[in-house]
Length: 321
Image 1 (cartoon, helix red, strand yellow):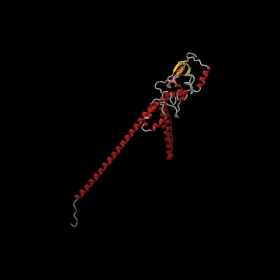
Image 2 (cartoon, rainbow, N blue to C red):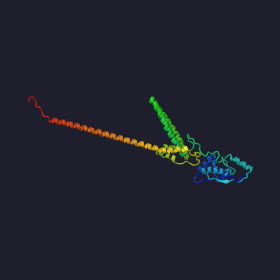
Image 3 (cartoon, helix red, strand yellow):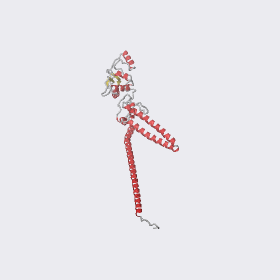
């Protein structure tokens, strides 16, 4: 074996701030193995995770282990002489990773970096996998636009049917609106659960959106908190954000204050219209009251004038007198 070959050695050490459980889960994902088998690596003895590597390949494997939270190191390969019996025992032990290896340098069942996805596969219509913050924003914008378009189509179709039969138009609008609502909720739950997985949280926490007061804060956490940089118990990290994702996320962030401004403007207009209507009704009431008072005063004056005329009238002598 030449002197320019290297190996990756691990003796159970972890990077600062990384919990043992998290590191074991990350290694299980890298090795495509279970946590019980990964426990065999944490004995404190040095284990060669990968052998006979060039320096560049060794650096690649080391970066993968660093992302998993493992403090591994690169060491040059040293010629080691094995007997035929020892080699046979090592090969047979290597086929079952759960069995203790005869040699402390026996490799694990799967080589690091081989058959391991660097990023998770994006699947929207599922509760499995992970999506990041920007991709979550982008999908929220897409769902909002789809809701507006589908709502317009449903309203147009219902109005067209209602011109011939109001009852049929109402029934059609209710059924299509209910189907649209169920589809929107279903997709929203799926992308929300994947966003929780990116944070390393359980998808069941999505039901916090049903709790009053909490549901006004919890969605903001999904937009603000960063996801795990490495693999977690829900899989590898999501792919890097494409240009389209960044553009859609930016448009959604710009769309939110516009929507708030529209809502505030409509609310102020409604308040001003209501205030104006109240003022008009008060003015009309006061006008009616003043008119009634004028009519009453005129009537009183006419009655007094008539009474005065009766009092001042001279009596007429009768013919007999």
